[in-house]
Structure formats: C-alpha cells, structure tokens
Image (cartoon, rainbow, N blue to C red; front, side, top):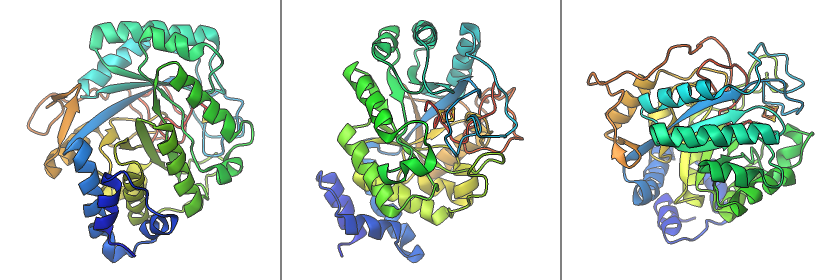
Length: 370
Ligand code: SF4
C-alpha cells in the first residue's frame, strides 16, 4: 500500500484514492494517527494555509417537523424536550447576524426545521438576507429543507450565497436514518440550488450505523457535486431521539474520517461541525490539521464550547481566523472582544447543534433542512 504521504500527493494532483486505500485510512492503526494527520495537513495547507473560517448558526425555526430523521430532536418521532417556535422575525434574525459578526464569524447560517419552506418563508429569508448583507456584510447560508421549483432563485436574488442541505450519510444507509424523504429528494434540492447559481454546503453525520463504503460513497457524491463546503457532524445522541442509544465513535476514528475527507475533497472547505466537543473531546485541535473551519458558539439546539475557547485553540495551534478575507482578532485570548453568548443554553444534550438559544432541537449542526 502507498504511504499516507503519497495519498496526500495523489490528492494534490487531483487523483482519487482507490476504495481499498480509502478504507485503509478509516482503519489506520492508532499508532499512525499523527502520520495520517500530517499527510492530511499537507493537502489542507495547499488550499487554506493555516487559516480557519468560523460559522455561526441561527436556529430560525425549531421543532414541529413532520419528518422522521432518527438523529433529530425536532422530528415527529422525537420526545426530546426542545423549544418549538415558528420562523423568527426579521429583527431576531438580524440580531443573530450581529452576534455572528461579534463572534468573528465569516458566515451566518440560517437554519429552519421542517420538510421544506413555504414560499412565504423563503421570501422572508430572502428579505432578511438582503438586510444582513447591507448591515454586516456576512456570507449567508440558508438551510431550509427540500426546496420546491423557483425557491432557490428567490433566495439567490435576496443575497443568500449558499444552500446547506446535507447528504447526511451514504445512499446505502439513508433509509436506516429517515423514511419520509429519499436520498434522491436530497440530491434534487442540491441540484436546484446549483442551477440557481448558489454555492453548495453539504455534508454528513458520522456515527449513524454507516459502513466504510457509505462514508466513501458520500464523499464521492460530494466530489461529483463540487460542494464548496462540507460539514462533518459526529452524532451526539440526544435523549428522546430514535438514535439516543447510539455510541459508535471514538476521537481517533473521527480524525481518520476527517483525514479521508480531506484526501477525497482536497479543495473543499471542510468543517468540523456538530458533535465535535463530545466526540473529539481532548483531540479537537488535531481536527484542524484536516479541516479548515468550525462552527463557533452554539449549534441548533445544543451548546458548543464558548467561542473564546475556540479562538484560543486556534491561536494555540498557530493558526489564524479569517473574516471575509481579513484576519480577525475578535474573541482572542489577548483580551479582545468576547463573542456574544448571552441566551445560550448549555444544558441540553444534542449533537453539536447548539443554538443561540432561540431554540433547542436538532441533533446536529445544520443537519436539518430535511
Ligand atoms: S433534520 Fe430537519 S427535516 Fe429532519 S426531522 Fe429534523 S427538523 Fe425535520
């Protein structure tokens, strides 16, 4: 078998690893972990240097969802105790954008529960996006579920830059995770977004019973879609969800998944998303040798670690936060501004998706939106 270093060189040359090589990354001996992350870093550094992009989530609409995504606390089969509310007002979404800017985020992610948005909800998000652009200049990602014909165009016209719609898992595992919509429904929404000229953010949730082949298949699908942004969530099993008892991950395996995704998606923005705190635990900093972005502050319905700790971690690594192409010192440990964290609940148990406590609900950061 080739060395990990040669995997990096192949990735940089635009070549795919063989399926056998990809599986070897996922099953690499723990003693090889640093060699593997070193190789992944070589690929990461070629496109992103030592920069880290920060994303900030806003749970714009929580709960009340008819879908049966088994990881999610907002779905019809979940008994998790979460806040439930309809789409937030423009003022609440604008306040979230101000928090995002204060936290040093480059991208503001507006996430709504539900199978898909009504035309009225789409117009509301489009109108708010235009105001956020004007007032804060943030990059805007909308995660609203399955899109109907014409909705992506309305979002684009309002100033939304990107649609998040996760594959969540490989095609072969999809029906074990949700039955109320199909893998092809998800692909159709991503294709509509692309046709409207929107960037694509699409990733997965690791730890839902998927095989190595499922993980590889999902990465190859995202490569085919040319997804600009790929969030990798690690399942944080929430009490009351159908997956509440699943505990499949250890921190070293999470790092191997990130390394594999860096080799297979060498130029994609790879984000460590929901569940990083509970699954990577003390190994969180190593994730940034493969990934180049993070969610900062909270997720959809669970709290992440304080943004100041993320900024310190980035600083301790010798990496830099980028804010719209400009290095940001917001929230740094040298006494710079502390990101806004008021209203953040740190009590609920979800996946990485915390939220600036408007909400409480999803199991995974930006995993919603069908
Ligand atoms: S992930 Fe989204 S579509 Fe699925 S149950 Fe949760 S809120 Fe509904």
